[in-house]
Amino acid sequence: MEDENSKNPFIDRRDKIYDFLKVATEYVSYSEELERRAKEIEKFGIMAMDALHIACAEMADVDFLVTCDDIKGRLTKKDYKLK
Image (tube, rainbow, N blue to C red; front, top):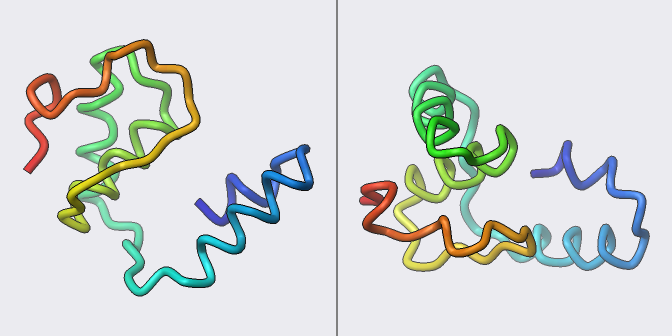
């Protein structure tokens, strides 16, 4: 997320995301398992970076995933078998 956010051309959005990251108490580090799961999620028509976010959310066992992306209702617990 930090890498993607550093490339955000919208300064106000980039700053807001950095503010969110400052209060994060848990980080998901890269692993082969994470990459494998993200590739599985991509098969549902989800873009690579978004699939990575979903895979990270699964690894962190979150209750909610907030996104600004327009995925038109394609993100549901049922569809992705989220843990």
